[in-house]
Length: 131
Image (cartoon, rainbow, N blue to C red; front, side):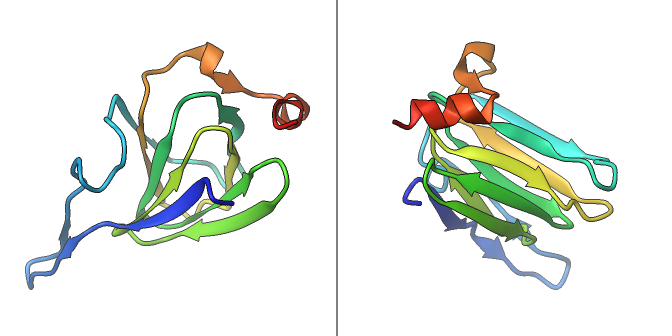
């Protein structure tokens, strides 16, 4: 599981509220796409794919959710629930997102723009690509 990593996002604490900043020094790739998931219905799952090239950095801006990652050998479940902590997922890692709490928001920062050809959406095909 050396293709996933927690990265602490600096938190500036203030009596008026906290501020966190994601800059070039935090995310180890050039940012080409940013999107977020919200209003995810109870029981719904997101993800269910791997990327050939794209690297992603996920942050729970609000609430919490689980990220299930698989590198072709090992499966691990990681709960994201802090807006000052992100999960870097390198390319070649299968990911599924589930167990979204009410009001959760998942921020995704990606190294590439959307290209359908970059996705592996079938788990068995993903496993074959790891051999």
